[in-house]
Length: 456
Ligand code: ADP
Ligand code: MG
Image (cartoon, rainbow, N blue to C red; front, side):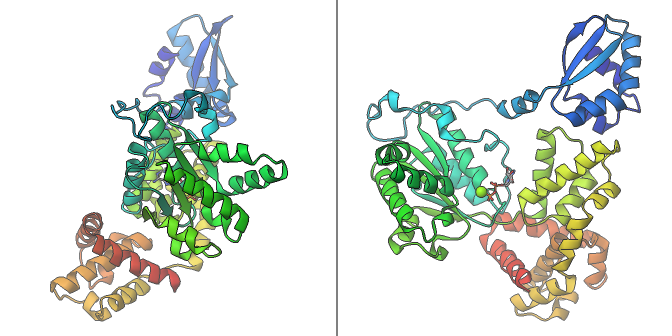
């Protein structure tokens, strides 16, 4: 099979996208003159079995080996193995034991095996892309995994749907387990916690319930807003939380809003949430969206040209789940239609998303008006040529937002700002992107203007 792949190198029928499919095939062996290939899904089987039939047959003939034909079989385990395989080797475990003062306090018999943790191996720090929008949350999550109950306890992560909260929770569990063998981790959604609690009462199994959530070193509880107005489940969680916290066990909580905006919670609960560190995840900027798409394409072994990646990143701007969905749709459509992924195809496939986005489109005029208002300047200041530091920076922020939030090209944005060159816009975009990483104040300014634009 390796020889076949070598033969196919440079064959014009084997496009980069087809190479992607080829790389998914695993040769099982040759029997009765037939080479048997396993692939992870139907799409890949169709692509290799039909579109590449001739090139592969020809290559087999040229090689002149035992196989003169081939067969493709779908073997779904292949795709699962992809996820199960660690992307990088486990880091060296630190010498100290982080959890509890007394290393013998927890008998090994109470250590749950890996499947009890409910961790999803898909979500790790390795495949989490760091950007300005999640840098702080990511750093806090890593710190907590490295030193459970020592760094911040609880860690509270909040933000809108689809921005990586669940991913971070699982990644904390995964990383802590790789650092500290025997560490007891449990992930639970608040919905599952609620059901579990209700069932435990109905079946008189309160002790088992308590053990499940209290005999752990790290409790990861997702979407706590789900407990809104559920007084009894909140009470159960309150006791769980206190027990864990009192025993120096780590609690990590996610929510769609900050603790102070959680309605339907008792004050004593909300104030507990504020004991440790509160951090948010925000919508990713363009650069981060592009990086996430690249990483995703790489891990799914999809070949997507740069301009298509950029296009998808531009039209899907607020939700990473939807961003990934768009990528999958584009590549699946291309496979089904036996065509390569190009910008025209992407535009066709994502037309509905673009139409939807146009309903609440941000116009460059909105951006410039909002930016001017925010900095207490006039619109003409921004269009004009003043080089005063304050005006110049506000102008650069407006250019940055035009690049980020509209589909205008760099030259068009330059024209808009009094006929400036596209390199000026590029420079402004780069400069503000960089500044946002270094200065929280600039980051906040850009975020606040964006929020105001969103409300309009
Ligand atoms: P939330 O829990 O905030 O609603 P999720 O954690 O479920 O969001 O994330 C939605 C999808 O986006 C998941 O598939 C997740 O892997 C992916 N994702 C989110 N943030 C990132 C990131 N920074 N890098 C890579 N993938 C991400
Ligand atoms: Mg989630």
